Length: 239
Image (cartoon, rainbow, N blue to C red; front, side, top):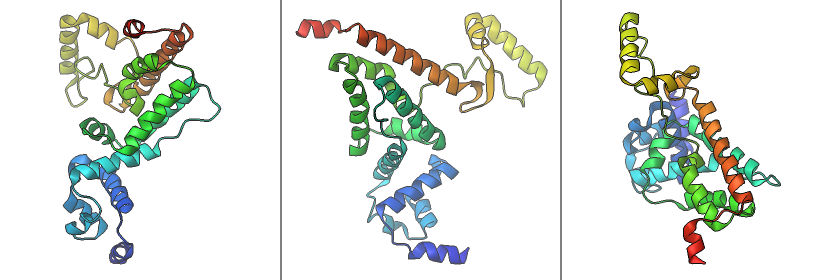
């Protein structure tokens, strides 16, 4: 262990190394455990050494998002817009699943870094290259929302999912009966499909299936509107 720490200290510190270590620390210990002092310990340096490369915690988080963006596959060449968009969204989702902290950090960012803006610009470019008007693409991006980053809000996690396994079976049954009685429509819909105990969101729906189902539904709708030459009412008035 001592030899490993000595070897680590001999490697020159730079911004990329600091960000890579921050990502590993967040992956292993959670984003709540990430701070400059803990990160310095992991790198075998004093905290002040980090500030030569990262100004503060916010810049560190911005840089970690840039690392995540760099993991997302570029658009597939010579593929139709629909295939290219689908593959890129699913690549973003794989990155999200590797880094469970990423959603929280992405949602907390106020100012977008050049790397994030480049990703967004490239993402929009897939639709424009597919012949979409700027007007339709504007609304497409609103509809996709966070799916561009590979995540969506989960709907049926709570209160319709079963209680934790630690709750006695008879209490679980009573709780589920009460939910079904008070919220019959939620209970009927939430129980209409098999649930996946290994879901990313815990005990709940098969979130990968639901994510791809919604993505394909949106892509089919975008394709139909594009083929129809759809234009928003506001764009018609501006002509």
